[in-house]
Image 1 (cartoon, rainbow, N blue to C red):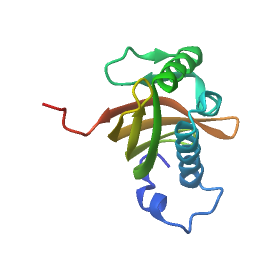
Image 2 (cartoon, rainbow, N blue to C red):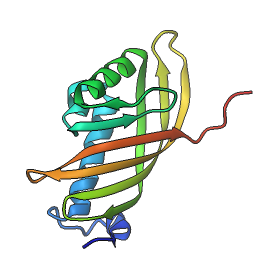
Image 3 (spheres, rainbow, N blue to C red):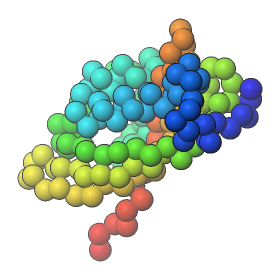
Length: 148
């Protein structure tokens, strides 16, 4: 199974619900819903206990409590309304996979109500434990040009 590319299957509506690609896609859909709802508990339950969040211009959040604290801070500062598009899903072993995606939408700055476009590229490393895929590592970066 190592190296098996599921990118084509990730785009196909014909995937059986039990396929790894479908299960991984469902994790991303749950993440999108929780992120857009500013739901800290919903986001955190998608992560492994030893998860690492690598956000731009912030120190790494290592471990589930640090991830929880990071999202608590994020949701106190901004409201997110984005949509993810899967670019690639690759199964590395029966327990490890990565998902590469792109997202677009709007970010509302809660302090002043300003709305700004959001567009990022993301890399998720997922680990399957006790029959469930969870986010083990997550890194993202903006693809928007900085304001001059």
